[in-house]
Figure 1 (cartoon, rainbow, N blue to C red):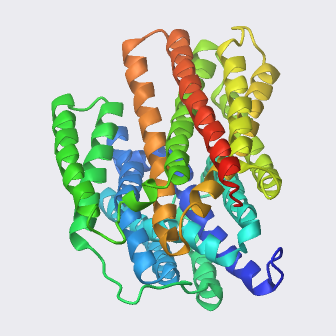
Figure 2: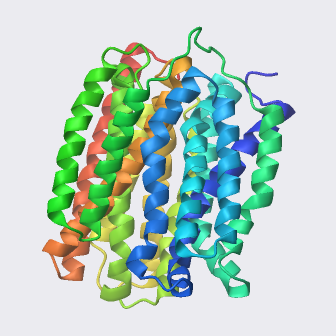
Length: 458
């Protein structure tokens, strides 16, 4: 096999990974659209129905690092295939659910499978692709995630317009079976498995408690729940987190990768990733309120003007991957954030009487900038780590993304509560997003200097 090409066998393996990645992303976006219908059918409240989304995301973030550790210790391939089985089984159970409680339990099974897949997605991609074109593999993943994110609401609306919500899950079944059999035949084994694998169950429990309580409390804040209980949860999470990190210092392969955080390139990439996703979610969650309430656009039109962002990211990601094969990825990511910041400024100073096209091109600029940032950022994050720690690096990458998204959404809720005027509150969110994006850009600039100074080839 050429070092700049993939053989047919590896192309097929890539297909297996992408199919399941798209399925797991779609299952969040389509569920958001289906919640009102499901709540009505099972005679439950809309706030209770939100648990169908919350429990899915909560379980995934609790299990990402433990399952990544299992992948590093034993087998990325086995993690992936087990995840596919559970996700497909959970989809079948969701479709067959006769009560809200049964559906919620089935979503737990789905989440277990989704966590298994997401925990080793990056590790498998690194194992499949030659080093010098790994960026293309990560960009391909980012492109299909963008497609799934952009198409999810429309796909859900179309399916429910011709059938029932059950088909949102039934559609997963043939793809899950296909991905399993393709993956079973083509996915590679770990390149450098440890001689004496050992999973740290105590650290696994600490991880689940820390992330579970933290994200549940943040979700409670965003849904205006009991503040006292949420603060108590955060306090317990902080105590468990301290014990968790202390335990990692004595591990040769820590679950929470403090060994990787000692690598400046890696820690900078994680930091910029969290900042970028906070900025993205601050913008994407706040803007629909401006378009719907402040500018009086219809729901359909609001959805359409939001689409150029993920669409532009989808188009730019593969181009960014090819660019960084010959250019400094740190400086490329910094340039991407510069474009993104410019788009945010255009949105902040957008006139109140702006038309649809005035919104569209501003959203597209943000998408272009984010696409040019995200792929280089991910490639540095992965390549700055040893091959045998790719599972931990990939798990932390997904954890950073979910952390940034959750913090961004929570900040929107707090700002909207403090600043009740829609126009002012949205622009406040955009200014804070601008600050986080600028921080991510400066971090990327510093990372570019590190790569140049050390003559690192990624």
